[in-house]
Image 1: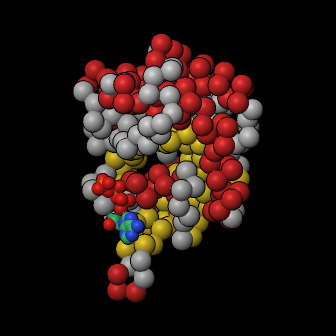
Image 2 (image 1 turned 60 degrees about the vertical axis):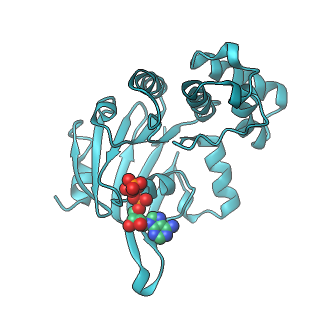
Length: 240
Ligand SMILES: Nc1ncnc2c1ncn2[C@@H]1O[C@H](COP(=O)(O)OP(=O)(O)OP(=O)(O)O)[C@@H](O)[C@H]1O
């Protein structure tokens, strides 16, 4: 089995000349199946840049980003989008649900974009909604759902199909702590079922659900908590 996510020597420079910002400065990070890794760090330390590069929403300036064995940094935009749709689920704070589509249609959308037949896409979407406990809301529109329910639809959309990598950027951000815990339980369950997860959070309570926490500072891995042994790559990458 290939490793779901493997970053080697990843740098990302935004802008040019005097305005250059080194958002990532040589990140080595491996996330294996069944592993949830939290990413913490001060504002501007590179957390979002890391997630965007890991999911193929952005490309690194140098280094390799292997998703399920494919170096997506070397792919063109079209092929990268195909890997992203097939293998990567995103949960962002900004939920990006399509208001004109029902919950089940929102969840089925990435599958349909990837060429799955509508009937099969709908069946998978219904299963994903059941997984997050929202079967009854399948035919409701986002505006008729509570914030927590909308969040669960977004999670179902990230988990639908057989995504091997789930990337979450503060998925608990706007939620109360009870709903936040529920979101973490869903993420953890999918990872325990064999996916790999990368979770950006400012909150140590949510990072506690992860197998280890990578601390970023100024685009470097400044340290890693937990799961020693799997962490040597990152510690070496940080020059520790
Ligand atoms: N598109 C961009 N153009 C220019 N600079 C950028 C861009 N995106 C990020 N940066 C810069 O790169 C650095 C890392 O930003 P990033 O958003 O990855 O940090 P972060 O840790 O996610 O911060 P926050 O916790 O505030 O979201 C920052 O200095 C930021 O200003």
